[in-house]
Length: 319
Image 1 (cartoon, rainbow, N blue to C red):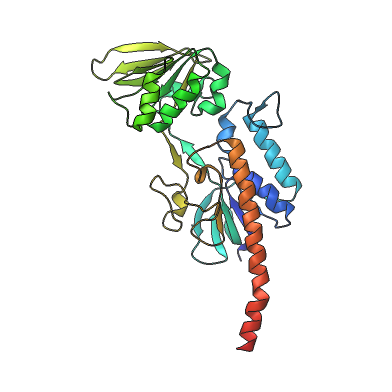
Image 2 (cartoon, helix red, strand yellow):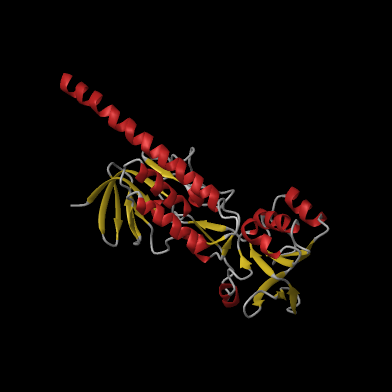
């Protein structure tokens, strides 16, 4: 027989673990399926200095362990296994993992989004040591230094403008001779005195042994190589929401993010929070906030379902 739960939470980053804390404190005994990538993107982040309550900063993995400890303190059942299949077509909803089948009256999805990377060895080796995908998170560490942004869309333009407030210089590296970003964003970047653009260039290597010292690029027209001095490289070529499990079962937007009204999805009783439905902010604090919202929404929805049952039973008896 499958295990039955009031709430199953799929995902173990800031959003999912906050939802676990709130639903556990509401005596809903949630099953929180973290996945083997438990902790989300913060597990690859070194210093976190913009999360409230940590004036001296905190390591990303340490912060996520605190989230886990707090959820377990209130009775959340955390399991580090992957979800292999879901069935959201009828209640109780079905969730299958490596350790079997589970059923739940409500589901909270917090599977996050994965930053797209260039796929070169040096980028992976120096991730967290000058290579990042979040200017808001990490730009502060490199203030008054030279930085590189890779990309040509609105995300890259936004990253460059954020970094220009801190950097001595920002160089945007783009593989074409024009940006695909909106015109107003392009204009702001091109007119900014601290931002330069390296057109028709692709990154071949991040230079540095233990920290970023420069970015080696190849000109796509001439084939010539150049090293751009930099203390940090920010990759801004987009994110991929982790929604493959839900395709065909929930409404997704063109980019694959779950469409929500608040945290409510297109299926009643299924809620989504964090980066899997956030196309704008993508911060640990906003993910945690939406995890709180999803937990409260799920709690209230379950209470409404419970209150409706006596009336339904009475109607059936009267018939």
